[in-house]
Image (cartoon, rainbow, N blue to C red; front, side, top):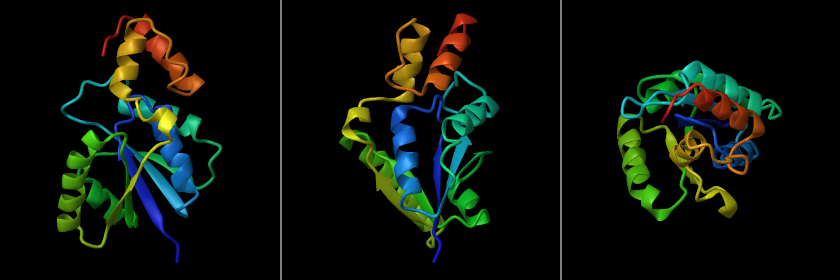
Length: 164
């Protein structure tokens, strides 16, 4: 039985923690769709299409990973694309309550889709996209937190005067 999963997020930007989860999930599931979405509650540093392109470039060496954009309900996206598992990352206990609520709501909306929680390697647990954006905007070095392609994109973005 082939199991396909979706790893949804804004990925603004894709961090080493996100990358770690995708690479490890790719070893568990037959197919992983990284679904890059917008969040109306966030002002992104990068437009969705640029986040998709960066994510594709960073994960190009993982053959069973696809990257696409999406909007709307994650469970509906999963259902329409034949994805039976939603992968969610947990960095800290503080993430759990929100993720637990999302998983239960998702189960209510689409009972045949499971949510699996994955924890990034310990060295990545303190990294968040919002912290990376802030460090980059202030001219700090983010090279330990993101892929070199993402670090270059952040440097270009904030050199143009954009702020998170």
